[in-house]
Length: 443
Ligand code: SF4
Image (cartoon, rainbow, N blue to C red; front, side):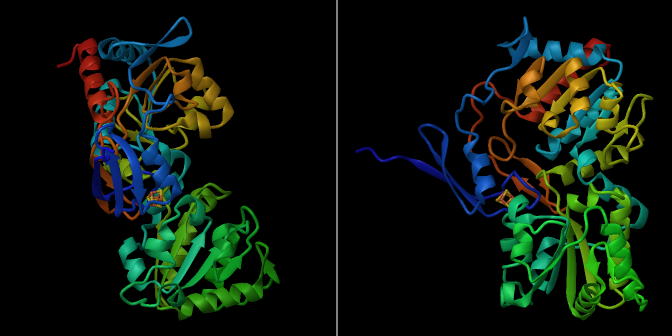
């Protein structure tokens, strides 16, 4: 029997969540160029690698909608059609960019500037409030490696890593042994603040069952107790005052603490004011011990999108180029309110699926106007697109740079070729830029 020839790629960085685990080993069958085994990844990371194998949901050729149906087209035709749509639009939107590599994100900024369009990434609907708060009050933070080696008190506030970042706990925050935490889990005290008894809460040492939308009140009660003030009420935000005293006692006594917060804090009532208060609370904790705070970023390179947009325009998301220079005003130039008000007359969606998570009315308005999707797989967004430009999956079928949730840049590795006629996001955007420039008479 003939033996299967397998190539193994080591030290692969997982392109799924913001943890960016960089210890994966991926086996690819040489004859078929199929992923046949993934080691060290969690289930969702593993599934992403297998999603690169041939499937009926994978786009392998450009598509253009003709007579209501997506039909195969040549790259030249598809780029021509996409450039026509973008140049004819008065207020085009370029959105997504968080599940692709930094080099493609840079090309997205270039295209937005040429078109005078809106440029936005997924932070607009996840950690945008974190960025606003950090711009206001700064942020005392560090790297995941430091937390692994030093943290003896870990607070997950409004985040559920067991489901959203499965290996975060094993690599950095809970079970892992660190240089100063030789006994791993036994050397750390874990607190979860969440209205739900999540699976992360179930394996924590303490669960603070805060009322939904009352994190702001709880954090300010903690800040008051830290300043030596007695609480008048028996309970704040659904948490008995004795529990608040117990928590304050714990945080004051630890050697090195960290708060990891998620969308339970950024997307509940008070939004960026929650994060503002969380940062101020963390800063005040440093009067007693060492304490830091880090957002749990979802899309694997949303931190990269914020970074690349910032170094190119000065702003991290929700940018308007319509006056020929970048302007920033979340709420006014964010994708959801613009779509809700039906101000956008064409959309280019890159490596993202807004139809799955934007409000219904905004999605309906997006579908009313021409839509271009740069996407490897069929999604609820691409299914309604007028032009589909098939992309290689960054981090599997092409390399590039991505920023981890703690802003450490890592190099994504290519493990196999992209199928069919797929091009990288960067190549597609370069072709679009060239064609748009031609149509606008620019060099
Ligand atoms: S925790 Fe995130 S980065 Fe790590 S393997 Fe799972 S999905 Fe990939």
